[in-house]
Length: 272
Ligand SMILES: [Zn+2]
Ligand SMILES: [Zn+2]
Image 1 (spheres, rainbow, N blue to C red):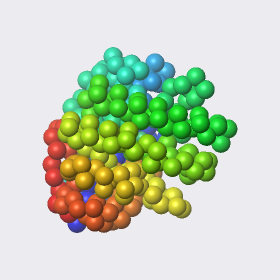
Image 2: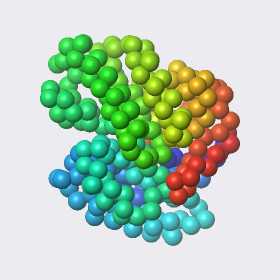
Image 3: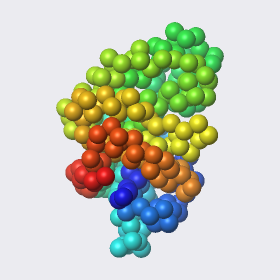
């Protein structure tokens, strides 16, 4: 099976703990054909850090790795863009730094007066169930806005806040109450040719899960969605391609005969 991991962070992301070189060596050891390095560009923090120069550094490290591992590993230049609309100029300046093969679109921060921070840093157990539900609703709205107004290739980790809300904080929210909004998101990405990521990072935890899970992937397939990508969201070498065999099994079992990678922002279909 030909495997590409299209969502990997390095120490050029604040929370990354592997160098570009570490990620490449891990990918080769795990038998991958290729990877995309997709460091964070959380544009809401653009004012606080020099995203442009950070991405100049990332791209030069990726270029060096491409030369070093030529013939051993395909390496693609990516970026995980979040909250583009909080500072479109900053986002555009970051995208102008180089030629990207793939742009991931993510929602990491949902601004609301009582929840001003990234949802990964919010203690949801302190909120009422009503507030948690309206927060998730707003998360999906932000995602729709990103789909309507920005240009990207892969929708990353759909349902991500649930991993904190139901996983870490055991709020026990039934995702099915958001089904119509999820359907809307899926129909919009299908219409725009944006791929749906199966994010396997939950397979690095003790209670494995995918983002999104099997039922949403099935819904996407039934709606005629055929562009699915796979990304580990690895921040350390051990997690590169984590859960990939299970993800490929799931994708195949739903009915897909391929998954997608990107070169110069054009989709390439890899048979499974
Ligand atoms: Zn992310
Ligand atoms: Zn990520």
